[in-house]
Image 1 (tube, helix red, strand yellow):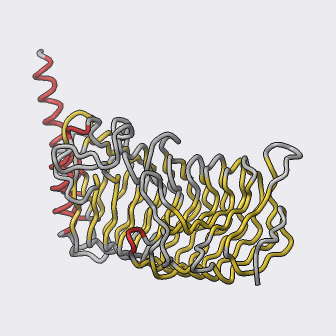
Image 2 (image 1 turned 90 degrees about the vertical axis):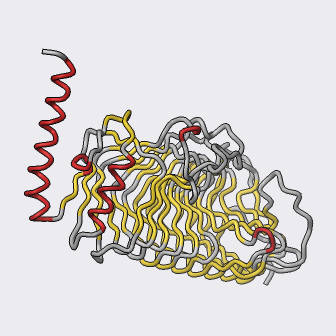
Length: 404
């Protein structure tokens, strides 16, 4: 019996099983198994069309649940999952792996500058023990703005746009060519127990970047990347970050805000109970000269640091290397910022660096119960400030540079 005959026989059997399973489960619970829509799951064949078909079917259902089965690897090209869907809630259970093409030349149709794009999908719940693999290795050594096939720059792994009520739980994201997750224009988001990882030399591989979103909670997760673990950017309010293990990477950042003389607004941010290890920065606020707007009511509390280069930093002269940044008068106004119970070790002399605009002071900045020491026993460390108004108490190193 030929191997081709056995292969065809096996494919026919899989098809019959899928049809039977689909008819039974579909009638009971609205379960949509991607392998029943033609996906191979062998990591070799392109399963993009199967994913598009399963989405169309599930999005039209009244109570859908999409299944990405375990022990399979689905090769998928750039894809958009468009809403709104018929149901107020849609569930995607990720048990296997979704992998991006390895070769940048294989990328086409990157209109949204991302690999997986969810837009207008309310009530989306993605959970499971599976992995989304961005296969970014060949992108990391290319310049950030390099275009492939005339359209594609380095793609984000997954972007959620206008996905109110989004929930992510348990999944893993690895080796993005750029950001792993971007949130834009969302409300009521909960991300928990996820694991994001990329090597510390992978440039611009932020863990989670948030823009124009509110009521976002990120908790109990591990983020290890080559850039910011979490970046909170313009248009964000009511953001709660807790229980994050960050490192390697560039720490947890507000910004950068106000590039190219733009308006920025961030407020009501709470970052608590986090551990940062072997990171370039700890907790950071960064704004460009020439911007406008505000970053206010930002609170960092109970932060543990281990071998962090810049534990506490406000930089209103952020320039992000490679730019010709000339002194400008206007700046994003930074105010009502608290740092409490931040402790651990630093690898540099400056544990606290607050460099605010000469024209626009940072105001109502409070530091309390800060205890940071050098990783080198006995080595002195310092704090420095420029145009910062506020108060400090019970801190080591002593912060004498704040003005009332």
